[in-house]
Image 1 (cartoon, helix red, strand yellow):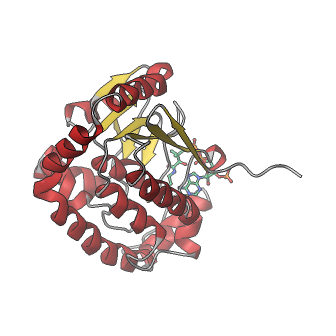
Image 2: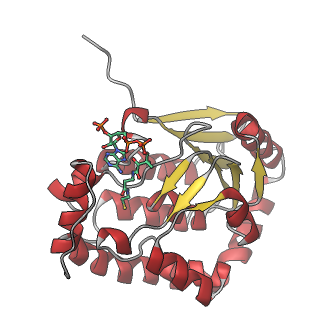
Length: 258
Ligand code: COA
């Protein structure tokens, strides 16, 4: 029997918890089971003094293709009490620094989760996208609040309405990432930065994060909740269903004036 690969790898070392998306055959598409693991790992890490910093990563050439499209068709999340929103809410409120290392595609939640990370490093091969409208959906993960705050309302509208992918240099110019690196240096650099942070006094990091986020914590949670209801409704709609079927059938969607 072929051993099942764990789609989320969790490694604790030198004060750093590294959570690695490990489902390359599906381009690291995230399933409800994977969100549940991420949520549990983060919850445990929040209360574990041995974890001082968290790193989210995929491979140097693949971050995540976003939510698993087959699951969106077959078992769409129907509200806040589902693994994807447990994960997002825990990530948004996570008390310790979270770093992300992004190489290759970062689609949908693969990009919006980054808005909750404290530091984002990406490879020059990174390709971000927010394709919600093109999939018959609406923004999630607090992005309707955080994206305009980060890049300004005009650019946020353009990014969310058109959903066109954008590259590492654009992400750097918009302030979505901290630094662009050659892909082969990405994971080592993120790990080195995480270890550097983990060697600092943890209480000071936690306090600094609390102060940096204080003004927006409640608003972010409220945005995630508001968006979740709309998102759940849109997932059931004909446009989303057509978009998901088209993706799985490897054809262009036909919205036919929907
Ligand atoms: N959910 C489920 N399966 C996915 C997936 C997703 N989000 N993303 C990729 N896959 C699957 C493909 O269906 C394909 O499966 P198959 O080998 O059984 O046919 C496999 O992963 C490889 O994907 P493919 O599209 O052929 O790879 P690519 O290198 O040409 O393109 C991406 C990679 C990431 C650019 C492309 O897969 C993509 O755009 N995915 C995004 C899907 C999406 O809309 N996600 C957002 C949801 S909000």
